[in-house]
Amino acid sequence: MRWAIALLLVMGFGAGAVAAQESEWSGETVLVTGANRGIGLEFARQLHEAGATVIGTARKPEKAEELKALGVRVVQLDVTDEASVAALVKELDGLSIDVLMNNAGIFLEHGDFESADPAAVMKVYDVNVVGPLRVIQALLPNLRSGERKLIMNMSSGLGSIANNTGGGMVAYRASKAALNMQTHTLAADLAKEDFICIAMSPGWVRTDMGGENANLSPAESVSGMLSTLAPLTAKDSGRYLNHDGTELPW
Ligand SMILES: NC(=O)c1ccc[n+]([C@@H]2O[C@H](COP(=O)([O-])OP(=O)(O)OC[C@H]3O[C@@H](n4cnc5c(N)ncnc54)[C@H](OP(=O)(O)O)[C@@H]3O)[C@@H](O)[C@H]2O)c1
Image (cartoon, rainbow, N blue to C red; front, side, top):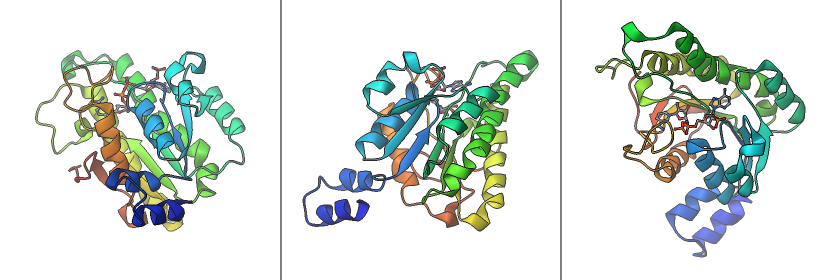
């Protein structure tokens, strides 16, 4: 399928670079967590349009109107809820998944170190760090039988220790730095199986989390991330990449 589309493009039937990029995802089965709004919804939309088979997760599928309207498969998942994760495993038993986009995440607090609420810090860690760990552990059998073996953990530029001169947002920053370490460790652990494990920053994006002053639309951010992810191979595993493909310092 992928090669057929590539051939059509070479023969001049396509619409140039955009269509060529889209063809990279056709035929792939991709699971996106937190796909009911924001960046996750845009991932589901662009991947579906590019010919991927998309499984979008939502905490409340009955309210995920925009996701359902795309015509993709919608499954329930709260990444902090063991029973929900177990139900996901059961529902997807035997299905090969090529790509896992661990997108779900929360922010909660802007404050400085002194004012950070330990209970809120625990909550952020549960969603942003332990959540992806639970989902990866649960879906490894599906990913092992997939072809691409790509795991994208949605990090943030705020997870960079090297770039942190501003302080504040301690729970969120620390959670994404921990997710970065988790991604790097996962890459090492799965290297012998040719997995591609990537920590990625979407940039600053206009979503409920990013706010209206952010410089990127979800469409711009996601199309950049898909272009960045499409050509990666197992040699790239363990990298921390920005949406535009540039390397971020740990
Ligand atoms: N926007 C930015 O500028 C920016 C920058 C850097 C990194 N990021 C990262 O990009 C990812 C997506 O961000 P966004 O801007 O799209 O955020 P968003 O608009 O707030 O959406 C967050 C998504 O995560 C889901 N989610 C939250 N808690 C969950 C849980 N316990 N289980 C499953 N799903 C859960 C939400 O579901 P509900 O609707 O049910 O709450 C929603 O679908 C996050 O990991 C975020 O940290 C965003």
